Image 1 (cartoon, rainbow, N blue to C red):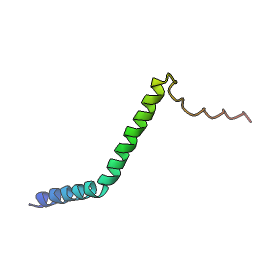
Image 2: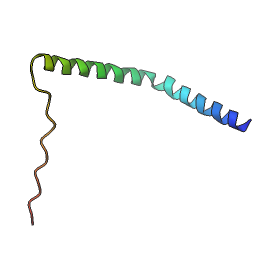
Image 3: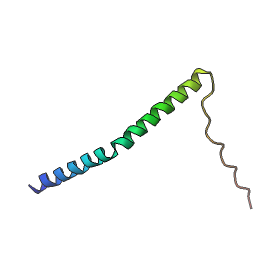
Image 4: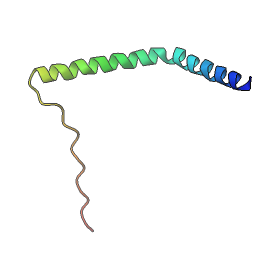
Length: 62
């Protein structure tokens, strides 16, 4: 019986988190979709994919 109550508690907690954060999850999905469109437009124009930031310069020996 205790195991069932614990499982029900975790289920309720998970459901609550999903319901509370579904707007944030949806907004994040929208940002991902828009970013994918931007990347696709760049590749259609023949632009090379964006390079990562320049690596930090190596430290000079003391």
